Length: 360
Image (cartoon, rainbow, N blue to C red):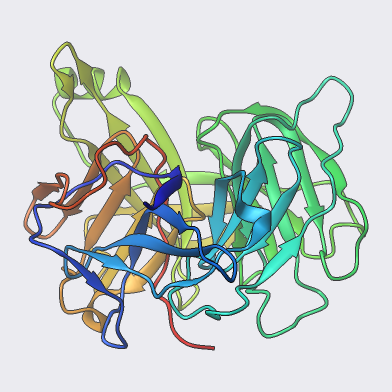
């Protein structure tokens, strides 16, 4: 009988059945669990994914289950690759096992150097992972960055480095403070607590370990009654920095209100970067991001073009965290997802988004 090796995010939408991945399957996805079954020729596994554009559960093709993932937990994703940490010895690997197009006989597993800790800091809790590119095709300058809870960042080039380069951030950051990589600027970005500053490190992190700071100046804020503003100020808030495929940058503020009945419908505010002058990035409030959808979770956040996927509405934000919802900013509507039929009985809270996949 198949055994759930580890389980991921609680979902979602009422759906009739689980179907097998095919070339017409697109994404984006949320990974739900990985299933391993004993086999005479070695263990076989598959990933159970939720396809957001069709609202269906999808099984990836069966493939050899890497032994490095036997006792591993998913602790971060970037560009469709997962970072897995061994629960016994805390060794870490990068793998493409969640990718339905990954090799059936030999899914890629890339070992990472052992974590080292800056004195008085910790590496027990990983906030997120960001990568400069996909490891495939082979890129010797491929960089992996890890944000730990607290003040430590760690960078390495797994194809070149035997150890991590550890960098202390100039501030204590929360678990919602996430590292992301800008293809346009070729820098790793991290929002400071409060979302008023963006600091960044060069792709060549050994050249200069000091961050570059930009003040984020908000313009064109929407007016609202004082009581509504006070209620908003009392909400839990996450700040996210997201870059579109064309290189546009957005600051997304996600507000969550809790009551004895649970979490209410969330609110988001989106600011588009207009220009940068004298170390300041001018961010203008907008409720129209055009033909785009922004995906926010514990993964490295990303954007996709809505017109490329038949089930996605443009000008929408997809949130996977305190709640699993999509917000349509054009229609001022919110869609709360529920568990699909055929979902495994228990799935612990652990939200990630995976971008659309394609064959290499």
